[in-house]
Length: 261
Image 1 (cartoon, one colour):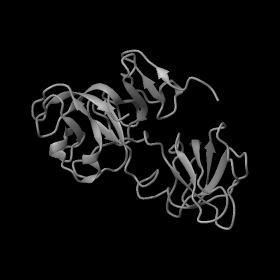
Image 2: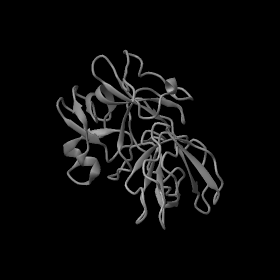
Image 3: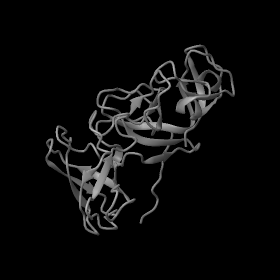
Image 4: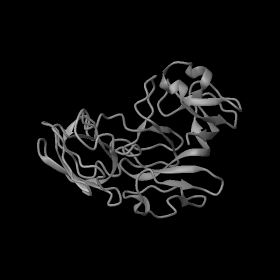
């Protein structure tokens, strides 16, 4: 155990985008600026550049690759103290190296031992479809209870701040809201997204007044809209993004006091 595990940055530290992890930090690392604004270390989807002031969410892909569903059951055994596990990739599905960086491994057998535990993944190697892949855990988070029994099964999931997607123009929410992009960021690059504090946001079809509660837009990708426009059904309309501080024009911009964290 070590302290601190929160970065206290200065104004402007959030305006960074690069091809490698910023400072070697893990995805999801929290940074707080002097005014209390909170940011998380994130990575743009390899097929999507980020636009400053737009709202993003966790990848909606079922697993590390489209259509794979790596959350599903994978056969695995591991002894107490192990810091890596070996799984077999599903038929027809390969695993790309580092896809699971800072992700999660959970034990989800219907029977057997070690069920209900979640472990932090450090990284993974590449593996062909149907081949075995090695998933490395953080050394500080080894296997606590042996994974075994007649049907020892695990699932894996990439970090929620990896491969960010822009929020969609519909009522569906693909994953947890990640935050507002602080700057234009190339596809696959690392950057910071803001979760709380004041930032400018792109506004949807209805102009804002001061004090409006805003949610993810159901009509325009990456935009926010007021709660009245969002309605009362669906996950998007129930997930508060923040409260406006300035009047906006229709389709314009507004300063929003974010409340995602």
